[in-house]
Image (tube, rainbow, N blue to C red):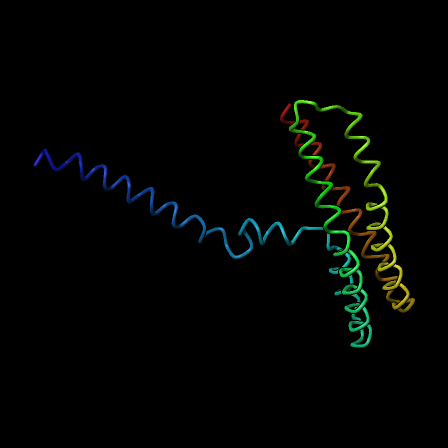
Length: 165
């Protein structure tokens, strides 16, 4: 009987750990898949605000068209931005790294960054022009609340960081 005790102990430990690893993702819930969760927080706050404004069907259609147009315009910049990121990564990992080279690369791609900012600003302006004055006021109120909540959150994070130190 003693010769079976050790293997059974090992098997029970393996089963325990395997069960724990199998249960952990299930307990995390539907919003905790790392990729899906991260995608929820990718700077699409404006879309969440628009959903709270009770847009008419016509406004919704026009907003979708504006967003689709902006997305198509940004697709044209995608390859340039991808090339920039690759060049920056190459510079960082290069033994010939220099701050001047990074600044030069940044300057070289400045027009692409500006184009992306202009596309985003144009889309925001066009969407804002679609809103009624009441919707614009409600949007401003929502943004102010979001800004206040973010300031509170930053303050709490600072306090926690100070407590750890």
